[in-house]
Length: 348
Ligand SMILES: [Zn+2]
Image (cartoon, rainbow, N blue to C red; front, side, top):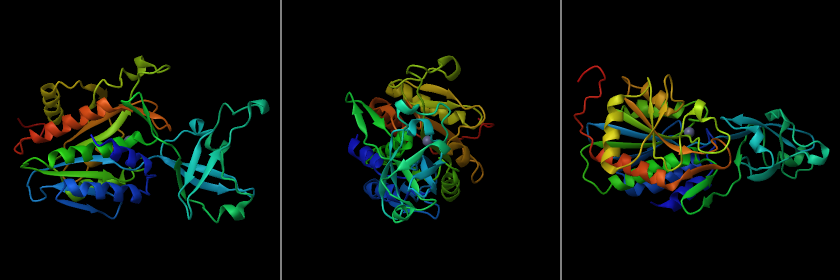
């Protein structure tokens, strides 16, 4: 596993709708492991093996991350924020924020001193602001303006060799997993077309996934995202189920999912002795899988997720063992896929 490429992805900002930098990085890396790479009008990046093959499998991960937008700059140069995706103001307090405006600039989210009453309990986005050191609005607008995007400024940490913590593991781990799968498959003689897509804008509107599905028109798709691990203090496992780091990749079950694909994934997991965990997505998955399914004539989809702790926080935490299992599982699944497979749930 090329851990360095994952670190590079994590170090590259890609707030939803502004994925250019990460897409260039991903495409440049994928050139070595594909017959064709390209991008499109909505910010998706594609890497393809065997573009001439009739049977097409799409493996998709979203390349965007949650972040913030500049909502208002006050006369003293303090920056107020809007959410870009499901980000929580409560964990933003005391963090560093990087603005990607005219000129990159870093600021801190102010936290009221305990001596003066501390941080409000019912904190909302309107209560938090960023201090970049500007004296007034005039100095601020030299660097940024209304609508500019921002992300947490974080260094990724390796915890005890095999765990990784930082921002945007949702879903740079997915971008990494599909890249590693392509790296494995590039060495093999494949009878099918494999379309890896690093999609744009999942965290905000899933528009990238819609156009990627429409463009490829795949016979099936496996979406790689992250899901909620529940193996840490304070989580209600009765309500949320039991999901643990190093418990293996998580397979979704529910109405959006094609069970025939799940069966094949389960066969692969058994052959490789990889443990699977299951999550319920009765109505929707809340991922690109929902959108890709609705493209073309209807795409049979499965959703494979990496369990992570502390979702949508700046310290999302995952295990390299699960990442490795997911890469091996998906590689084996694709290598053993019969292009004559009938995924129609009514037939066969
Ligand atoms: Zn995600």
